[in-house]
Length: 42
Image 1: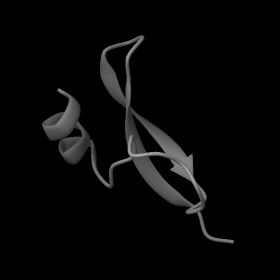
Image 2: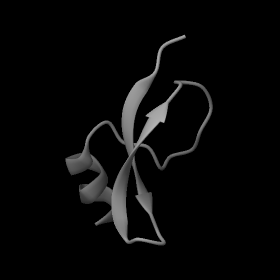
Image 3: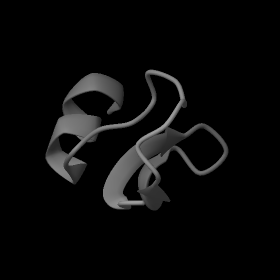
Image 4: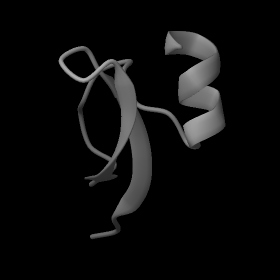
């Protein structure tokens, strides 16, 4: 199984945070880069 570094917006901190994604399931709050997360959520 592969794992990927992704970024998601954390409403509690008001920042994009890094997490490890397995590639299965999830929601739309996952972005390939910190910059992409900031464009959508910042």
